[in-house]
Length: 315
Ligand code: R5P
Image (cartoon, rainbow, N blue to C red; front, top):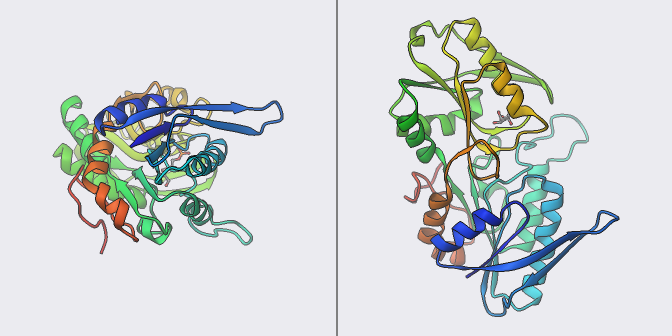
């Protein structure tokens, strides 16, 4: 197998190549003065299995580059072309909330399904679509960061009490709490706009001696966590540790979150960021190696859980 990395995924691709016994090919990516993208594979991919490694932070640019790279690999004779997207964007718009809106989760999945043969991603935002198979027509693995996040919490946080900000976070909160051996609760959230979030927080007085750990799949504007941090402060709770899988961090969201009173902000390395403190490369590599045959054969999606143990996430 040969891995081809797109911008900002070079270091994760290098480490994946070592764990997956693959080689790392060189890709030249350039943006022309008019904004168009250029990609060139500087490696011999003829008759090889190729995996593009691209986290979809800055998704519009990355998506086009993935399509160009997949076509270039195929036209250069690659046997199969897969995509390892540690962060998969556009999944949160999974319904038409207002008349005339595009359901971007479906559109992006159909574009990618037409161009690559298989997909591996970490903690995709699955809410109204229960599994990747409802979106993708190619084999797709959903790798869970939860066990690794839970182990990090158990090692680094004193008396943790895990808090998920909204109903859809229950899926990863449960996994994390189990791995951390900690109690948890799930709050309710109303989002009124990009930066306008209302959190409902019950009375948490029973957990005043614990360290609150807010966990979510994505921190984007940071408003979900900031609203919760403020409620916890008002209730006299300790400053929380904020943990997320995907460090999207729009603008200066990480600084705002620290300023709001987070004791610490920690993310996994699915997106390169200064808050990365939890390494999910071994989890991705192990999941891929276990499911490699299935990715080659399957015509439907399966889900990987508990790091590498195969188990359907939902019936
Ligand atoms: C949405 O339900 C997600 O799970 C996150 O809670 C959300 O994307 C976080 O966004 P933000 O940081 O902009 O509040």
